[in-house]
Amino acid sequence: MNRKFFILGLAVLSLTSCKTPLNITQIKPEKNISISKDLEEDQNFTNVIEPYKKEVEGKMNTKISHTAVDLTKQGDNSNLGNLLADYTFEGADQWAKKNGIANGVDGAVINIGGIRTTIGKGDILTKHIYEVMPFENEVMIVKMKGADLQGLFDYYLKTQKNNPVSHLVIETDNGVITNALVNGQKIDSNKMYYIATSDYLALGGDNMAFFGKGEVIATGIKLRDLFIEKFKANPEITAPKDVRLNFKNKKVKTDE
Image (cartoon, rainbow, N blue to C red):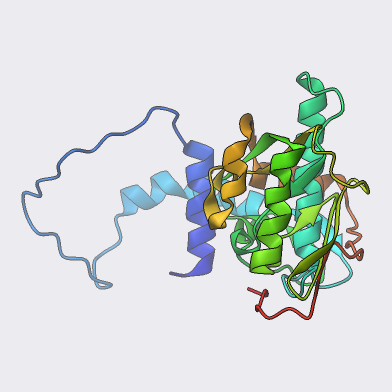
């Protein structure tokens, strides 16, 4: 499918989505309908959709930020991955402090596979964020005991996968965790931690079963909406350069 129309379709759905669930139990077609490129255009349909098309295309092509470097997914510490992990942390942290979690969140984890493309240097348009994040995933906060949070670090030791993190440091060497930090501190097994992530990961996606030991708190924030808001708030992007994941002598390919 042409990427332009795919993004256009996503935006139309976003603008016209309905909260009421649609349950389809059975479909009985009365006749076969032939689909062909030779079919004549329905002018009435074209006239109806044209205003929406123009509105969506206008929004999709709106400049929201700028980057002087390519934002990519490559490497254990991809600059795009770490940037979006930081945005996830910031959005969840702000929400948490407004909703009774006094100290906010302690870290964030997102999955590299959920970032569907990269952003080239230059102007960043709204459509670029739809291309990066075409899904309707939401920000979740998982409340976990320190003793259970060790499962997060064990996951990275086992997979050696470059799933981006924020406010976390994970270092391994020859099958051993050599450094595990949350906000620059060692894990306190008796402390409660709040980790921001997506609903997909919070429910065990990408084999992150360790989140199942925690309490999942919904924020109602769409990741894509959050990213758009953050890019708008930062007219010139400063890509993160710090090292968060460091897999020495790794034997598993991590780049996606």
